[in-house]
Amino acid sequence: MLTKEKLKEQIELFPDEFSIDELVERLIFMEKVERGEKQSLDNDVIEHEQLDKEIEKWFK
Image (cartoon, rainbow, N blue to C red; front, side, top):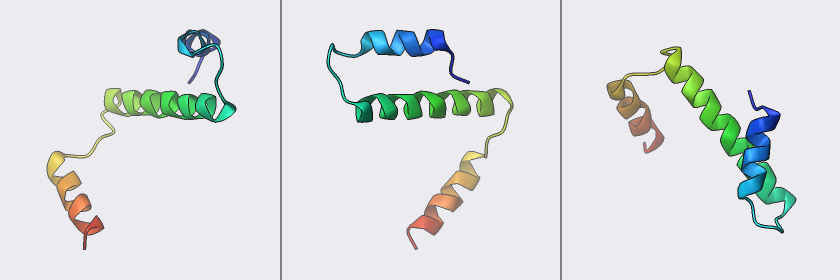
């Protein structure tokens, strides 16, 4: 979950002027990274071989 502190850190990295779209994109990115880290820690992942099979389906 995002925290105010993490949000403040990210806002400090932005230039003096930025769009709402840029901020929203960064927030979405941060949330996805955190979700991925949690899934990894919880061992909620798929094996490499299974991923290859899923990707093959996308291109058929």
